[in-house]
Image 1 (cartoon, rainbow, N blue to C red):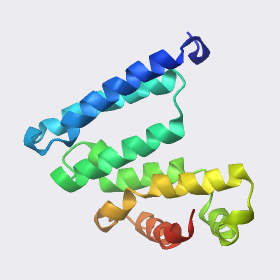
Image 2 (tube, rainbow, N blue to C red):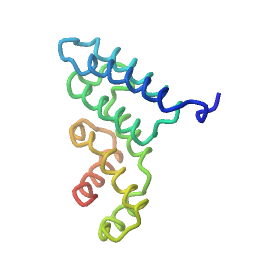
Image 3 (spheres, rainbow, N blue to C red):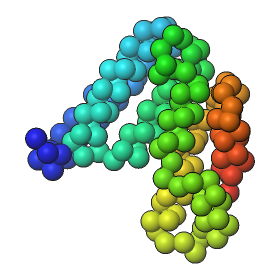
Image 4 (cartoon, helix red, strand yellow):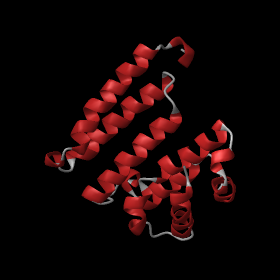
Length: 156
């Protein structure tokens, strides 16, 4: 079944499942069980994506929740909660190179809508790194994240 066969109702149903499970994943009273709730929430987000939901929005949501749980519960044994893995995933999802983003950020107000959106996407995807950057240990990954975060305030 192709994603075009799914309608907005299907996406909204998946997003409702995401939100429901997200509440439990964010609930500090749930303890380590929060990781299980997060995985169920991620599965719902995957369903929304398959139904046509924006990967950009889904990635931003995933990265925020992963960062939250890394801070709250630590990395654990699962690579999903590894700060270095999250940093790699964030860098991989960025739509621009750092050099390109730095060049565009100088005069972003004069850029096309699509270029501004790409810059904004970089900023949104990088936001979770602000809370876990001190936990990223692997080089040159840490340096790459630090350089992006130095640029972060200049992004729209």
